[in-house]
Image (cartoon, rainbow, N blue to C red):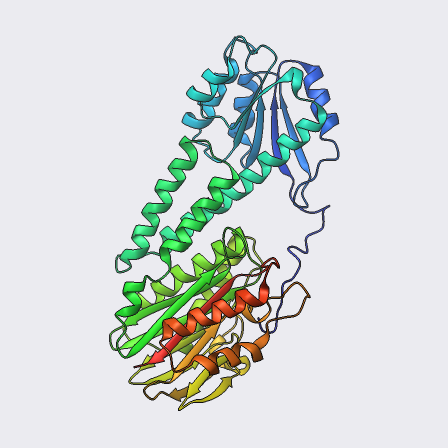
Length: 440
């Protein structure tokens, strides 16, 4: 990455961070007192708790109708009636239509509401017997519930963002929206938690990557692509987009990795395709400027400090026009290897709401038959082995120099094989993305 490396998640202090809203519904004052005591110093993701108390289901309904964004509710079953808590669950899910709030049934009379029956018939997230729910277990249950709520909320925001940006021209993104809906329905019906949330994002990310068949349709260029994420979801981004006689190749790297970075990368891809579909002519500098404005304001809405480096390569008539700031670009022309530094070709996307066109330049290279262009993210050059030595740009260039006369696919495979041999048993800490272009 250029200019800005990974930075701390948030500059908001613990004292001013908005608390997680939690609702406790129980007709026993001792349960309220025990819960408050157990969770008195609870903190998750830099945010404390704000606990609302209700002694009955009807009192809880009033709180839920007036207080939005309640993350977790612990609900007793037997209160003013034997099934008051279960009726409250139906009220929350079906009347208020709150799909995000995590609902945890907590009962002292499991015989009146057997666990299996409740889980099968009601849309709840957990079932606990009061006699076994110690302070320590209550802490764990609360942490898991808030983690689940936070991730589901991120997915919901991603789904909403995609729905707003997708147009009728981007049929692939329409398919992605359909997949999001199907996977979210699966998440709700099967009551899956964190693993399912990550699975949604991972499948969506893989689904939107250019397919081999798409790459083979690009005239005059062989293209081989590889992406491997360090976690379930990655923050690297690449795409191949066709616009009449032009082929636009994009590669970028979001700060950090994991679920939030993956969601950010998906947002970048949907925004890029939407902007390209709305413009008949390619102007990479204007495209980067519009993308920067869109991503910056979407990041504000997501309360995210993410941004990314991004290079755009416009290929037309054996010429590449390069715009935007990312890693170095490796080029082999007539057997001679050179690297192109993109530092002065732009700025990170989404970091500042400025006229990016004033800070973006072009570089052009002409390609002859057999010439090779290699694009990558820093997950390759900054990968380390067991001795904490980085793979580095020089070693990458050596492998390209040794294999440039082979096909694009063979060059890509040789680079990844050499990288894996270098890393050995060391853990991979960053996402790895590699694109190899070869002029036919």
